[in-house]
Image 1: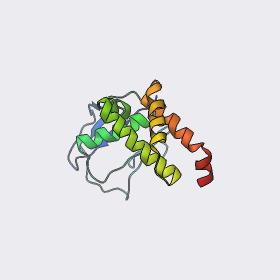
Image 2: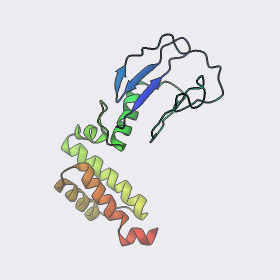
Image 3: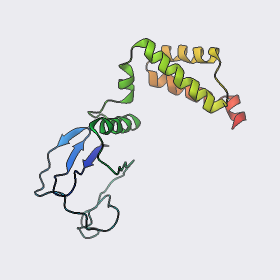
Length: 167
């Protein structure tokens, strides 16, 4: 089953903070993070101190995000939300659609109109007409979810003769 895991190092002498799907996990290993004396870079799927083949990850990695600093709690939640939404995972992170649902209807429609205006400009190299934006917003209001509506509109634009001619 796919999952999101994060490892946060607070530096040498500190325990590693580990979470899976947005839930902090207890770290059972004694000791703490040691000083970095290994090879440059880092290893994914094994450990530098274990001989090759003795302990390897057996699976797929869909995406790896690496930062050069500790993320704030808000930044870590945003990264988790991004991954949970992108890969449709059930986690403690809020999906972006759930976050968007917290807007009131007027703010959501304004946000959708702004997104669609940017999307039309990127696709057609021209501003969307008021009629195009209204038609897209009406369609989005008629489908079961905002995501489905946005996907429908995006696919319609990408399959339009104007888009195909432009690109």
